[in-house]
Length: 301
Image (cartoon, rainbow, N blue to C red; front, side, top):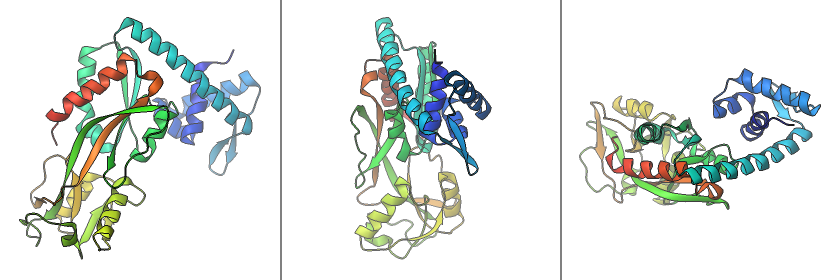
């Protein structure tokens, strides 16, 4: 009989593309994932991974087995949901994904509340790029994710998933103290022409939103500094190197030398929680969503 935990490891490698990424998602070491795959190869008498460059790739047989594993994991999830619903108390493992500023500014309060109220619930947190997290919920890698959408870049709603609105995260323009825009009120997008920008790297949601918004206002942004960490962006603004547009969630107090300036209209990103429709009856899902929504009005930046 095939071992479900080993099938889970193979499925994670198929979804994430590498042993190390699968290990991060599962909370294991890469060695443990490799050992699980090796044991699964012995069980099936089939080669599942093959070397390709510096990494590994699934064989055709492994890809078919990973698809079967996804079906089996979905069946197990339905059974676990039924049992948990009968008990009426959140329990078992719940793997939650969140983008960086939500993981810092929202999840700690929600997870602490869940831990106090439901000691039988083993909630796990994985920081995931918002581009990827919804797909990982659909694939069964995550049980629930917190992600966001901008007004001009709405998220798709894949079949088989449900979502609920968590809150609206307002954004401010951050400029160095003494900058010509500091102290201005009611700035419009067209007022931001000819500025040096500090922003997220290319191919991220925030980067794409900034570029599309400024181009729509008739200006091509000068993206001088591109860095993923919000705290790094703030430090670059404090050094007088440029301006940045930054959401408030998880931002923390601004250092001396950085000034907030309001834009009109105020840029907003909307936060949502996504989960699989089949898990909607699971108390762990409903209670996690409740805690996320209850923490939102009380969150600190």
